[in-house]
Image 1 (cartoon, rainbow, N blue to C red):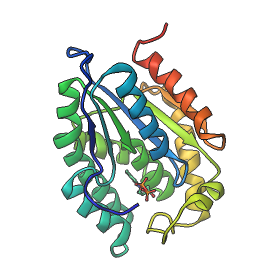
Image 2: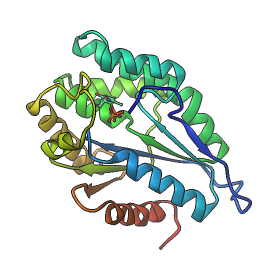
Image 3: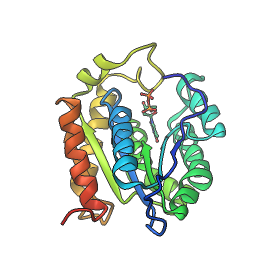
Length: 230
Ligand code: TYD
């Protein structure tokens, strides 16, 4: 995907919008090539058409103009040490939350982000071996403590994900098989321990199946989270 600005897409609310509905913050997580952006955009269209809610789709890194520069630096720039890498992602996140995510939530929008804080824990801790606690605390500080209300984890064997990627691999995609296996396990561990640790609920989906079946499962879970079904 080109690293251009324009990651943020706002679907304007339809006439039958729900003006006083509180915002809802949902993150998509998973390894490279698992299909997050496909599923996120199908969900955004459905939420907009079915609910008439304002839906903001965005991503990390690179959901803002500054974020695009940081994205280029961290994915296509010179090699950096793990702490610098963690700080670049956290800087992107701080600015993204301040300028895009919080204002949208305050308007009552549903915000769907392609990656958020848990990517940092999985990649910069699980992958790079910083401690999960320090990486998480860095992001919580950067965002003023903003967590998603639901996280959808698309889980896939990293070998299969890599086979789906097109174009020249970026720094993170080049990080090696062990790195991507550790990252996958870190995501699954995060999902498994979320409730006990008092973090947001996770919905783990097997991303090896057909796109429409995955989307149907995600819609059902999101509808429940939004209180649309009992
Ligand atoms: P992504 O935009 O999902 O990749 P692409 O659009 O190229 O498929 O993410 C870019 C890379 O950044 C991905 O390898 C995961 C990594 N990443 C981190 O290491 N930490 C983070 O906090 C985030 C948000 C992403």
